Image (cartoon, rainbow, N blue to C red; front, side, top):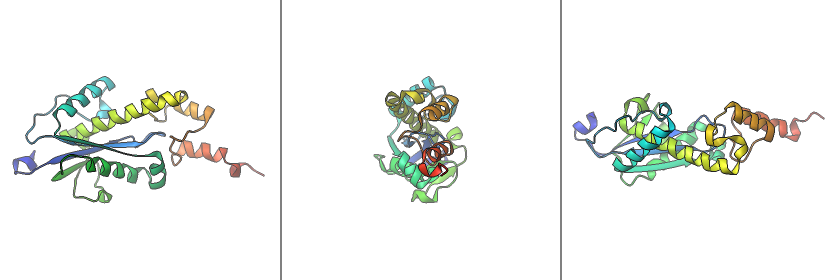
Length: 204
């Protein structure tokens, strides 16, 4: 990496998982590798990896990383702030949990002025940047595990398989059973259900 070749210091890659689902938190991870470390073969954007391979790569990342930080923003924060700002809040929390202070922060996508620290934004960074791809894998595996745990409490919504996304089985469960406290009430399908359930929506 050019930053390392120029004598730069600690680089942290940051990415999030869970911007699109109808339920569950958004989770971010920050990953720092030792300078001049070897690339992990097969590491790429977590969305393009089969779950089993993603889990194996997460173990390798955890073994080789100098530091890893994970942060999340709750459903309540998503509804209050909007998903973009909640995602950035999760990133801030992930960076704050790093055991080292990065000299350079690399973020997937567009610049995030609200992040409150200098950073470099890389479009499709999870496809072309090693530390961002690693952060993507860590964030995705942590969030998937959270949704699998929540699925045990709410089996009707099939979160163990759909991870909170608006799949046909999830939408059918919403129609049949309504929303839970883990659903994002600011997201369209859930908003519609909330309006239908509200006494104010019933004609007099």
